[in-house]
Length: 201
Image (tube, rainbow, N blue to C red; front, top):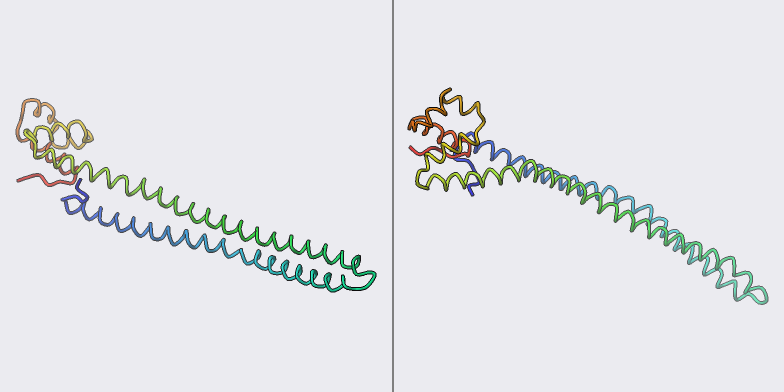
C-alpha cells in the first residue's frame, strides 16, 4: 500500500485533503463537545429544584418534629408538615431526575454529532484515500512482474474511461491488438499515472 502519489499534483491534492480532513475532524470534536456542554448546562434548573426541594423538606420536617412535642395536639398538628416534607422530597427527586435526564441527553447529542462527522469523513475522505493507496500498491507490485507493460496496458483498456484511452490514439485498440510497442507503452503509462505512479524511464 502506497499512501501518497508519486506525481506532484496528485500528492499535493492528497496532502491538502488530509489537512482538511484532520481540521474537519477536530472541528467536529469541538462542535460535539460544545453541543454536549450547552445541553448539560440545563442541569442548573434541576439543581435549583433539587436544592429547593431538599431545603423545604428539611424545614418542614424540623417544624413538624418541633410541633410534635406540643402537648395534646402535637401528633395531629405535625401531620401537615410531615406531608409537606414528603412533597418537598418528591420535588427534590424530580430535580435530581431532571439532571440525570439532561446529562443523558447531552451525552447522546454529543456522541451523535461526533458520529455524524466521523461517518462523513470515513465516506468522503478515509475510504477513498485507503482505496487509492491499496490500488497504488497493487499497481506498483504489478510493475515488478514479468510482462508488466502488457498487463498495465490491458488494465488501462479495461479500467480507464473510454475518452482517456481514445485520447491516446483513435485506433488505440487496433494498434494494441497488433502489439504496437508505442501504444502499449502509452496505455501502461496511462494506468500508472491514474494510480499515482511515475512510469519508469
